[in-house]
Length: 319
Image 1 (cartoon, rainbow, N blue to C red):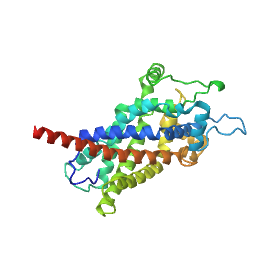
Image 2 (image 1 turned 30 degrees about the vertical axis):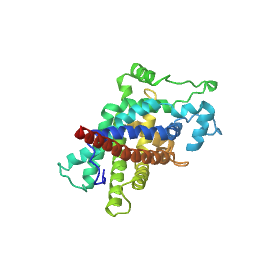
Image 3 (image 1 turned 180 degrees about the vertical axis):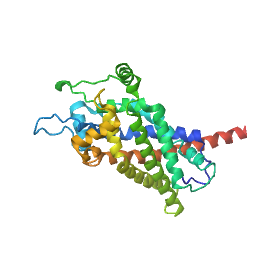
Image 4 (image 1 turned 90 degrees about the vertical axis):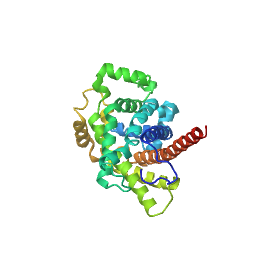
């Protein structure tokens, strides 16, 4: 990322990968209820067989959170958290931690302080797509857990009893392909998210520092992260909705990602692609807050690890 105090030792790729994974987990812990509400709102549009006059179960992000707490208990806001943490350790560590490394690679090793937009977009889309190649099952399990409602009085029971049971059940019932369901959609979504998220953060932070509007500290990180969250929500919401629907679907419901998108378009109209965005804009609330927590944590964890490294080095020198 752009910036960095001159007094600070430049973090290595390993430090960035570690810091990104931990920061992603911290952000998920803080924002997971918002993500659960977003997923419920996104999949709600599939239920078109409601009797006339019956209102939708979930209305708005805060209304959805309140409904889940009342009907299922507060613990269900964190359904799929373990899979979510698995996901962040795989996804965030690679897509964010390797971003600077890929930027350098595409710049052909040139240590330019201000690489071009094309280089940044290539780096963001590459690391975004790379993560899906090996971490897709964690995303499938996370979405399935968040989408399921446990309401015994209505005859609704959980599809999976635990994270391990979800991995096993999906593999047994749907085969290995089930764990990689929506892989191409997720590659597209992750490439788009990474470009809009990381490149926006990178450029805005760079401009803030270049024009000396702020120093390379928390207010700067907060501002750049907020802008990155907003940009990502606008750009990636349609792909995110299709990805959620397709991953949560039963075998045979959709013929593929394109079929899922076309079915939504013809049955529900264009507004279906922004399910979970209208009504207090839950996607923005989730992505905006996630970006702020993640980027601020990422920058601080990097600095803490570098300081720890420097402390260890100085101790070894004095011995």
